[in-house]
Amino acid sequence: MHGTARARVPEQSRPEGVGAAARPPVRRHSVRGQVLDALRAALVDGSLVPGEIYSGPALGDRFGVSATPVREAMQQLALEGAVECLPNRGFRVIARTPGELAELAEVRALLEVPVLLGLVRGADPGAWAGLRPLAEAGVAAAEAGDLPGYAEADRAFHRAVLGLAGNGQLIRVADEVHQRIQWAARSRLSVLRTDAGQHVALLDAVLAADAATAQTLIHAHYAWPPH
Image (cartoon, rainbow, N blue to C red):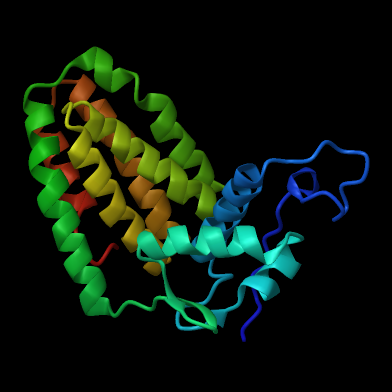
């Protein structure tokens, strides 16, 4: 079984008896959450390779935890469409074809683009201005080459923008599709920087009441494949 995942769970989150002497025991759900974060980062940065099979015990050794929180985290990732469970073998990272990625991108655009265009037409400047820290966090992560950090910042910005529409179900469904694309499509840093810059440019256009530029940016942002 493949074993290239390099991320590690911080020592303070390890179960009692694994480098955690004299520390209070950590609740299992806390360890599972940190393992889940580490696995998500490994999916984005390529440490978990599409098509490869990973076992709970092998990943547990790498993260310094038992196999149980790894299996629980992997089961969550299976629900999110990042891996598939293989009984008595482990978990395979799903490898999506270019056609499948294009289909997911189309679904995402169908969900989000009409909503964003509507929000631009009826923009609340104060609400949009409050999104700038999220947009700037994405720029900082992209400039630093932090793929996992950018993935989370990107999704946080889009959740916040869609949140202006007041539809919680839309946020949940759109975020799930967005996440499935992120797991499978590892973009070049130049693409991430372009994406991050479009977030900031969109805010600037909306706040300047420049609806035409905002609409152009929205369509460019959802173009596939990304350039």
